[in-house]
Every structure is written in C-alpha cells, then in structure tokens.
Length: 321
Image (cartoon, rainbow, N blue to C red; front, side, top):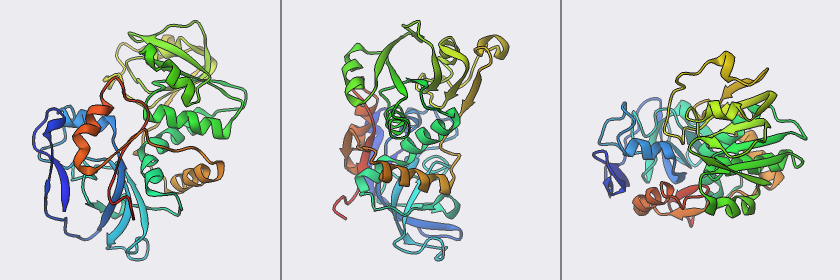
C-alpha cells in the first residue's frame, strides 16, 4: 500500500510518500480502508519531535474515516461497515492513518450510520467531536455570551457552527492574533472579533462561557474575562504550553466560576453518532478549507502551520468511491 512515513523529526519534507507492506490482521484488531482523515496540530508537534513517547519511523495520523476491509469482529465490524476512529495511540504507539489502510484495535473503531459524503465525514471526527464534547461541558444556555479563544482554528470554527445550530440566539465572539483574519472570522459566522496580543485579550468585555483553545498559556487571562459563575473549558494547546504553572485556583479562577476540559480521547460511540445526527438534521455546513491527496501531505502540513491557515484541513483517498 501507499503511505506517508516519517523516519526522523523535522520539517514537512520528512513526510515521505512510499510503498509499505499492508498491515496483517491479528486477534482483536481489524483492517480499515482509509477514505479520508483530518490533519491536526498534534501531528505537527509529533513531526517536530515534540511528542517524546513517539518513536520513529512512524506513520502518523490520529483519526480516520473509512470502511472495514478485514475484520476480527464480524458481528460489530462486518466487512464494508462505515467507521470512524479517533485518538487512542493511533499514529503514536502504532502506525496511524497517513496511509491507504490502517490496522486498529477493535475497541478504537466506531461503526457509524450516516449518509454524509466522505469529504464531509472526514472533516468531522477529531475536530467536530472535540468541539461537541467541549460544548456539552460548557453547559451552554440560550442568551449567554461565548468567547472562542483560538477562533480561526478548525476546532474553533466547528464549535461556532455547532453553537449556531443549537443556540441561534447565543452571541459568539472569536479571537485572533492577526488583524488580517478579522474579516474571515466574521464571514465564517462569528458576531464579533477580539484581538489576542501576547496572551492578553485586548478588550474589557467579560463572557459567560469561554472555549479555551490556546490552553495553559492563556487560561489565567481567560478567567479575567469570565463573568461570575461562568465556565472556561480548556481544550486546545495552540499556545504550545502543556501545563498550568504558577496557577492559584483560589485567586486565578473567577469568582464562583469553573474550569473544565475535554479531549477527543474521551470517545463515546453514542455521542459520536449523536453528533452525526445533529449535523445532518440541523444542516450544519461542514466543509474543509483545504483538501489534499495523500502524496501532498507535506503541503498540507505547511499550510496548517502557516499564518494563513483557517479552518479544517483534510486528506481524501479514492474520493470517487
């Protein structure tokens, strides 16, 4: 099969498109024909050598959509079943989705019932599931004000679209560090834009709920803009900082407010299919901003880590099927 292999840490040119053996099925694992997948910032971190537990050579890719090709669980995962897989140790402890086929543990493969096309479906798993889980943890209510810190990211755009579908009266503000993206954010569907300069929001406004995608680097500042009783959901790590340092929960959390989180490893098949139904029934406009082929993965990485990136980037295999 064709796959993209990284043999040592470095830039996008380390992603090599080549022939590799198709994985052989073993007990408890099934082979998935990869129809598409999203590109994620965590894969860029891994490519750079920042994921210390990942050993090279490795086929990256922490998510995919596809079809069961060979199965060891024919009752739950029959051949031809449409499936989604997210996270676990996919693309980290074992080879991931940057390939035509991927061998996955059965418990990490989720059957889905949907008529969404492959381009739409490939845009959803990691990005929309993360946004959806975070939305639920924020316990949104009609009439509230919401800030998306990291508004131009794929997860930020997905979150905003889901909020629009479920709570049309909620006012959603997005942040950006680049003034050039302000018009893009408004065109995408945000009500307002706030500029984020060196980890500080350039506004006196406060919000009922904050979806924090920059992460530990800006959580303390986010609480300065949280209304009493509000919630901050720290989901992303776009600020390249993994831990809260010098954080005093008593002083740094806004009065009577809450800090929560969500990550896509918290996968629930019922919740995943609920998300797919929501997208179909509400007509959520799920579209990638860029679509690449498998052999174009270096270009996909370059775009995602550039200042021009905006929204979700995906790769499609055999898009005509």
